[in-house]
Each structure stands twice: as C-alpha cells, then as structure tokens.
Length: 380
Ligand code: ADP
Ligand code: MG
Image 1 (cartoon, rainbow, N blue to C red):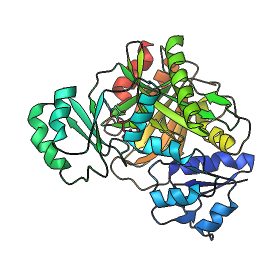
Image 2 (image 1 turned 45 degrees about the horizontal axis):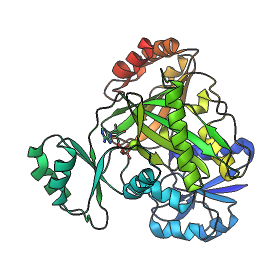
Image 3 (image 1 turned 60 degrees about the horizontal axis):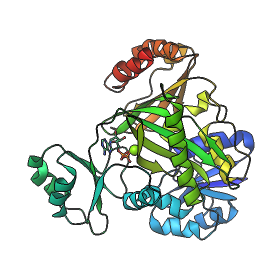
Image 4 (image 1 turned 180 degrees about the vertical axis):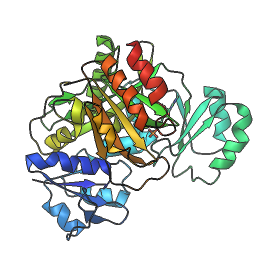
C-alpha cells in the first residue's frame, strides 16, 4: 500500500518507519515547495505531486497548517483522512472553539477579537491575565502573547498591530491556573473502531512540551471516562479517521479541552516503546482500513524531548530501557531534534533511570527533568 503524508518532518518520518513491517510505503510532501520526498532522509523522489496523489491509497497529514490550495487539491482526490473539516478544526482556533461549544465540551473561557480595540473589552470580560492566540498557524507556543496586567496592554497592542485580524482573528483566553496538563491520543478506524491510549501527563516549558509521563499518575476512572467521552464525541461528530490528540487542563475533577490536534502527536511518542501498538502504526492502520492495534500499556514510560541542542551522547543508552529517536535535523532554538523514551516496571524505577540520565541531559535543555518530572515520579 502507498500512503502520502502532507508535511515531511519527524512525524512523517516516524509513520514511514512504522509502515515498513506492514509493507506500507510512506512518501511525504514538502508543503513549502510541493516536492515529493522520502520522509526518512528528505531526499526528493522522482515523482510529481499529481502522480503521487493518484498513486496513493490513502493521504494524510502530519501537520494541520497545510496551505489551503494544497489541501483543496488533495481533498479532491477523495483519499484524505482525516477529512479537511477535521484538519480545519485543529488548524483554526475559531473553528475549534465553535466545535467544542457545539458539543458542549468544557474549554477555556475566551473571546474572539478581530479588531485590536476589542482587546479592552476582552480584559473587561475575562480579566487581566490573558493568553492571546493567533487563530491560525500557531504551534509550540508560537503565535501567542501573554498579558499579566492591564499596564501591558499598549505594548501588546503594538506587537499585534501588524497582524491582519480580519483575516486571522485572535482567540483571547483567560489564563487559567490548573493542576496539570494531560492529553488523550487515540485512533478511530473507518468502521468506527476506537483504540485509545491512556491519559498521559505533559510537562511544558515556555509553551512547549518537554516531558511526558505515561500513563499519567493518579488518574481516577472518572477522569478517564470524562476524557474518553469527550474524545468519542469529537470523533463521532467529525466522522474522524486516523489518530486524534486532545489536550486538556485538569482543574480539580474537571477536564477542560485546551486544543485538539488532527494527527499523531508528540504526547503519543512514548507508545513506540510503552504500548503494544504505537500511535504511528495505529494511524496507518486506521487510514489503510486495517484492524486497529491494541493500545495496552506494556510499561510505564517517560518521553523526553530533545529541543534546540544536538542529540545527547549515545553512551546514555547504557541506562537500561532507554531508547533514542533522532530526527536528523540541524539544531536551532526551540527545534525538536529527537526524543528519548524510557520504560520501567514502575514510576519509582523510572525516576531512578531519569536520575542516571541527568549526566547526559543538561538542565538548560531539559528544564523539566530535574524538577517537575522527578518530583512527579517520586511522589506517586
Ligand atoms: P500550541 O498550539 O502552541 O501547543 P496551546 O494552546 O496548546 O498552543 O498552548 C501552549 C501551552 O501554553 C499549553 O500547553 C499551556 O501550557 C499554555 N496555555 C495555553 N492556553 C492556556 C490558558 N488558557 N491558561 C494557561 N495556560 C495556557
Ligand atoms: Mg498545545
């Protein structure tokens, strides 16, 4: 089978790797120039986009911010999964909020702003600690501005003055104080079959995911049921096919949806070692109409992102049950270069492995490892 992925980054690469044993050949489209490439090495393939679309059995995305004309072109083939509406719901925060509200799914209080003067009204409605998000093209904390007091309003207005808010409105949210961030990654097949991974806990630094603990410690059955009900409502409404990720803020016994991602997700990378079937394989299975694989947890896991620096020394692999996944990229600030998956028999053992790994993982690049991650694993 042939699968074509729009986007040629690490997610396409990991889908290609997962496809190999199944005989699923994955090629990718570099969305900046529409060239078809091998996602493993990014080398250009001798095939035009039109021919690749024709030759594909299924087409999917690794990234929701696909240029409209390209998405439209691919959509016409009838092979795009998830649907263009599902991708739009993840790409456009205004559409995302409309979907959540339509389904009565709790989310952060917000106001949509398409004129800079409306920011004063937003402060009056939501209070003066706000997070202002561009409704399109934001990721990893890009396209966001934080307001912590009214005094900063003029400065923020100046920073936003260049944006065309009529074209790309802002979603202004109340800055919430939550206990923690968790996410649910799951797949839905064409026949409606569901395969859901457990809730995982996500540690962020400067708006970017750094560490993930799977399964999330101290999750009650009620929280799992809440998350799964929300996930199911979303995929049923969208008639979704493929892997979907839902990010939540936990506030007491309630989960608020932060955002959804219509694709395989960074908070599902642990499943490569920690679950019976990884998210990449399950995405391929879903879009190729194969039975979905078990999401059973094989071992508690920690996933550490390698961000902005070279990959750590491979001597690090001497720590038992540690796996390195490099993306073959050149380092740049905030750029995801790879990730490390660690599994163990229990959380305490995971904590011990993390302590051993500190030798190779400097605090400047792994800011959540020393503090939050270790605390999380020791307490539970
Ligand atoms: P991105 O698309 O960049 O992941 P998010 O909306 O998920 O954008 O925001 C990134 C991070 O910023 C979140 O994971 C969370 O840590 C923080 N954040 C976002 N919205 C809020 C909010 N309303 N209140 C508090 N923190 C928030
Ligand atoms: Mg996010």
